[in-house]
Image (tube, rainbow, N blue to C red; front, side, top):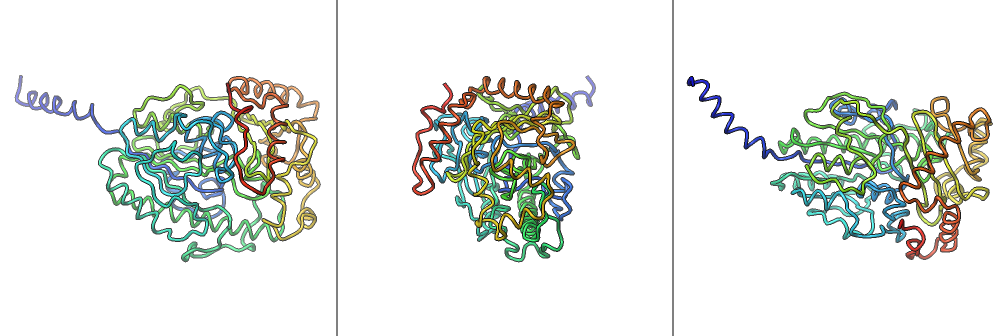
Length: 481
């Protein structure tokens, strides 16, 4: 053997064990509050340079969804990989709603078992808290006042620098939750006003008050972008950026009309961006993805065993530019947020059409008056509706007292103003989606496949009222057997 060959052989023998035991990547999971994909990289004309850069360096998912448009419900879902009706977190943790079992497999316990150091900065907002044994916890509040934001970055630096093994860090920012603060600590430097913008299009109304609220919502988004840029700078300063998968999502859509607390696109569709070192950059994927897909994705990153209970599938093939056979249908649901707004719903969509099922049809949706009331809007409803077209007014009337089924052509009607459920020409599509919804309900042991259970849940919450926040015994008839 020549001298050169002996050297190469020796190098290979030295490298193979090192490669075999190479540490898996870190995971930085960034979650923002109450915002849909209203940012530059998704086509909204506001400045979000850091999120735009993250999208250029990674993969942007154009059709990403949460299982339910509520804070605790969304978070419990991505942490357990289960729909709310499966894990039990059907309402807000602050209203005493809780998962059925603290032993349900979750991201934190699974990643820890794989050898990761786990941390959380910001709120958890899921019950019971002890189900999620993070190694590191900081700033465990909602912080909707946006006080002391510099501490988020100091705590992130402390955690990253202190991690001698692969880490999973979940950072929860308070923007863009209400109140829509125009400026905090000089951010954004040049706030928008109502004269600069049109109201969010999925509201369908361009009233001056809605334009101002939209402007301040955008101000929250621009401030959030700055915070994410600062967090990326912290990651880079630790020297671990090239060994870290960065995942960014919003927890659900904006807290405005036809957004949060609904099953409309403004509520359930979110931004999702993944930057994975070594993966194809600059992708814009059109597949229907769900935050339930994150748990198996994190498992694949960590080399952890994927629990067989999970409803999602790993996004790794998509991020790495592959074209696997993907899901044709995507499902979401709704139960309640707080006791002010119970309204059982089940939803299915394909690449074009979306069906919403309202099992408690024919009565007024309590969430309508809650959202349209003085808590959020100074202008009376009649004044807001005066700005709307006939089609939009009809859509709001339908939202107030929903029929059993709603059907929308998301290609022709992306903001869901024209219900096609009663249109005979769309009857085959309606029946196909109803059949797919029933199939999914059976597969996931959904108790609301029985309309009587939906009515029972609705009445239980109505009877409990909005005064004292006390636990409700819904587990007895809701927990899947």
